Length: 255
Ligand SMILES: C[S@@+](CC[C@H](N)C(=O)[O-])C[C@H]1O[C@@H](n2cnc3c(N)ncnc32)[C@H](O)[C@@H]1O
Image (cartoon, rainbow, N blue to C red; front, top):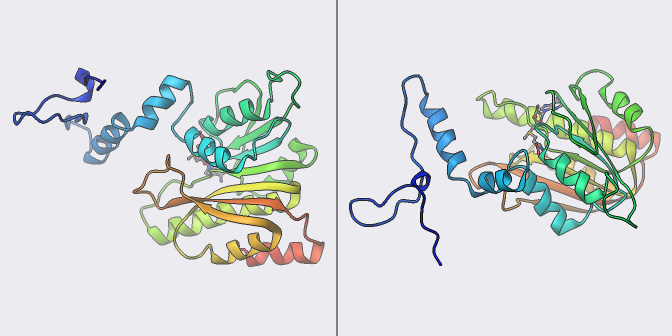
């Protein structure tokens, strides 16, 4: 049965065709860009689903779709979530790695999240506020972690500057820092997941990941908006920490 549109979903146009889109009026003081953003949010099925299912944002479905395909968030896994605000990925990870011990008979995992911004507490996750690009940030994360991890995932994104090249360099710097942490803390067999933007400068990083992981996939999950240039790299089967010489090479050759 076809669902009848509610008043929020739009109305029948004069020609008798249904317009299911919510249109937002340009109110005084509201910029065109925020009108379009609001319209997109109101018409996005993932936004509605996140509200219904209790996730803090539509981003949760990106990690759900990636994990449904690659199965890295297993019970007992120790996960580092970089750029975790408002917390959708953490919520998914807590449930899937059994961080609250709710799946009896299954191993209990751990979720450590961090972000520049403050994050409301999430039961089962340990969350810290930190700029991951600041001096000593990776050592701080290692200290909080207190041991190896099975998954390092990063959805970090710098706020857009409006300049494509600058934005690209910033996101590469974030991915590079995340990969560096992954090389340092991942257990052999571990997984690295990171958001990247299509644009070229990531070729070196892909090559580096291919040398250190059994498989490297570039994925655009269905929940990732088609008009966004974001994609995700999923590197599985970490081959073990590079020796110290290779490690220092890693630091300079990721870009
Ligand atoms: C797309 S959001 C992450 C959404 C999150 N995965 C979720 O499910 O709720 C990107 C986040 O990266 C964070 N971020 C950007 N640069 C960062 C940095 N240098 N250190 C820590 N977090 C950073 C931003 O504050 C932002 O909250």
